[in-house]
Image (cartoon, rainbow, N blue to C red; front, side, top):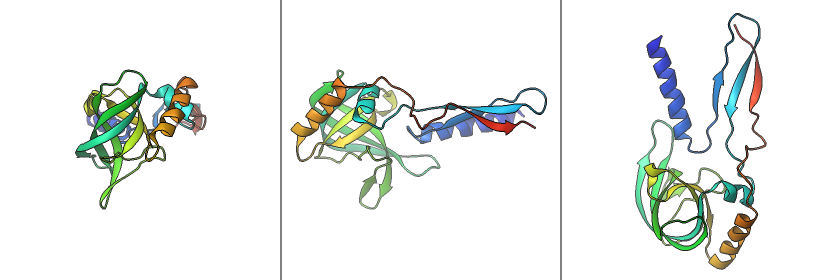
Length: 189
């Protein structure tokens, strides 16, 4: 029983960690005795539908130029991995990022480069400019983890204005409206 519990715990932890922001975590309440409904509790991630949602969750937001790709770390058994990039901060829009920082993001490797894992999550390419929102995560460098990345090429002034407006209108972090925190799954055995 101890081995089974450790295996299930390891599998659950791996599932949560490898999805890098798109995780759905559930546990099952099993009441004593048979018959009553079992309830699954979910951990809902913050909403990211609007720029204001993204700005509210990110600790720092900056207009950056990607200097270089530092490394690509292969994921475990799931496809994809982490792209580590070194960026120069051209303009700070929120928070206090360092003038240059190393940041990590989830990507899918494809022939000749990397693909995004969600719509507002462009893989960072050296020589290009982006507005990035980050959250702290020491595992991926002094800049943390990329919460979103939006292109700033070819017009960084317009990109900076867009995200300055988002910061001014930022929404406090709240669960994605599509996420239901508690659902009834039927009866327990």
